[in-house]
Image (cartoon, rainbow, N blue to C red):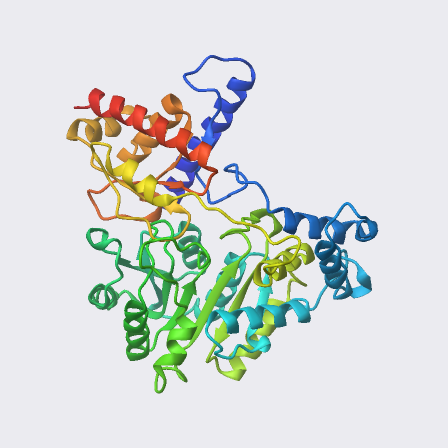
Length: 460
């Protein structure tokens, strides 16, 4: 199935690039440019980098700027501080394997503030070249390649597909649990129990992977839901892998991000001292959107000292994360304060409007978006459209791949089919990033609306 996914994505991506070339060469199409919202690459989708972040990074790369009055005072002071933490005062030097110690400490203080004063210990934090690198390393510790039955990991459906690939490449088995689309993608303990039962005789589950806020489904777990998951993990002795990359992207009415670590601590014994947890974050997501800088971190909770020693060895084998990315992490976790010359006013696209537009289209449905960077609406395709998809292409396409291909060709919008992330049999979805600038989002939704009405008419 994964090889088929690679082929489907490769074909869509190649065609998107071909269309971009055709437009540059003057080929006439119903649109002037391709709107690429396939990935969560915010800058690739048109979002402008934050000025403060780029100014500090620029001064770190070219230190003479620190003495230039062309940059605000707090930028120059911050750049000088960051360079003072680098070996030899240069971003070109290696750092400690776990990250620049002062930045690791800064991340620890950020977590402590976020969690209402609950302690965070720097020795339990590792900076890495992106969050996926950390997830793969922790999975490498959890998965026994020679075990019989094989190691299992519970994963949500829908789920970020690169993590699924990381699990299977290590020789482990993915055990899907389905989020309830009818209840705004709620995570239900009954479904976790069903998934665990389904693994009997197939694999031995050791971990539970959770994404909160959700990717691609855009949900935010309530504190009650987080508590229920923690109890389940404790009862079944499962390691919690918690992807919290979108914690800064919560905008749903009456929604609030509550970290698993904070909830675990507040639950007290026996949970707080025994449930093993790894929490992941990154500069790629949220308001920074600095995907290309490749920096993230993992915080580990309640791991045995011998296991921590082994993890330290694994995280040390590849030198260190990019130093510029580490500095970006520091800027994310310790941003300008009110009153600073560079204190920015951040504005986000209103995803609620996006939901309303999607639900106004016949044949589309989308639970209210609460957090994250993506919409994952359901396509209620007609039997005629489903049948057409199965007989059209050289390799029989999934109906949602067929839809995405037509949308790219006729509407100039590059999205991804829902089956790549997992979905219940007989349902179809598309996924697209909703964090592009407002003018691009408005154009995207206009094109989607126009294309969808034509598509539904053609296959009514």
